[in-house]
Amino acid sequence: MSLVLSKANRVLSAADFKSSVRRGRRVNTGHAVLYVTNRDAAQPTRFGFIVGKNVGGAVTRNLVRRRLRSIGRELLVDHSTGRDLVIRALPGVEQLAWDTLHSEIYDAVNGSVRGR
Image (cartoon, rainbow, N blue to C red; front, side, top):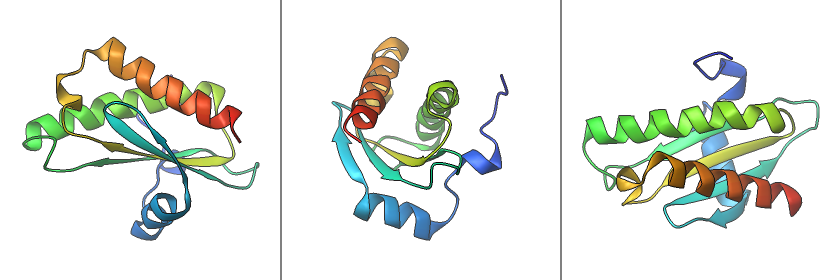
């Protein structure tokens, strides 16, 4: 498995982020908000991450972003096509244990897919 999300699997443009946040189905976890937008089934799933300054300093934000990207890479195995997933980290996420963060995001994504 690759250590990075390929360019095809990343939400890159501000317009795509804005569209996902405004029109996507919102799934709240204790420490993050997930916005799910359905796309054409032939399109690859893309991930975007929003980690604001309210989470912490630059080092902390980058750590949280790396952790979320790692979870995104694992999710691509089961959810490889048809949606955009934007994850907004909330304050307190930096203090979570890896297992807790992992299960929160997994449960949110799997719950949103079932509700599709």
